[in-house]
Image 1 (cartoon, helix red, strand yellow):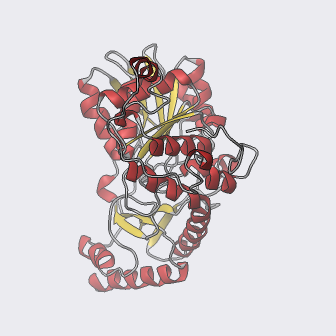
Image 2 (image 1 turned 90 degrees about the vertical axis):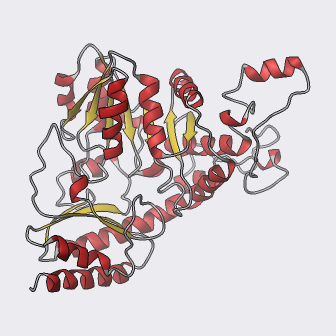
Length: 406
């Protein structure tokens, strides 16, 4: 969609993030003055002439040609995400995992080599170890803290270095800038799962990333009611490669999901500020608990990745981990979790609600060692008041102690 009639309700890169979030993808002159982009339910698009059909076919990635390639609603969503993330083009798909798989399939072929961070989201690891392996692509996992040392792992067949910072289970902060410099020097591309930071807390392309992936299901949608994924880039050739694969494997974002993504984007910076502030408050309280060995949160000065986080990020979200001291039985951990009143147990994160999970069994390593032998919890701090969440956790620790007779 484009605003050809006026500059009303447009924002530029010179505006603050909050302003761009409120205006990106909106062109009211094209939508009868409607503040929100309308929901276009469309599969078939008709053409008045053969010439018009042929002309649209040549621009199907940039115009409305067929529902699978996009509608005015999905195009507005793609435009808004690309704007906020500092890219030029965005491909939206049906989930975060779809964004990961489309990126990998678009950039890799049989005989290629992939460098994948060892702390990656476990479904991504599973994709690499099964479907990607069956395609003839070889994956090597690397230490998330390797930084510029990644150069020693790059082979002539290495086409892509995949990063995720911070990791969504163990929260290591990567030196993405150093990794990108080494990768580019060897002719490899760099992809980043940027979901923890959302489009507003980390500037991927200013740090050397070629493709930025979002599980838009999380903070972009922000209300736990839609599945979406995005891949953003600044290079037109990469956009066409990813968009082609997304179409070939049948990805088509529904207009309602795209609308919910746009709705979430409008309040994203404001919500993230609250998530971040409350998350740090709860994390600091947890640091003082006798049951806790360490809180895994890069915004805390004590975290090993804090210096990189402070250099590269503009804030924190509400997701972090907690390593408990060795000792609690599985029954005690269940007692802690089962009685929560405000924290719910559930996968995903990024909505308004607070979540908690025992992620001990989900942590997988092949290039590095995970030496902690106690339970690990992952918390998503939502938009509730942090004092209420702290009280909920305090009661949970009391149940945990009682279950083990302490």
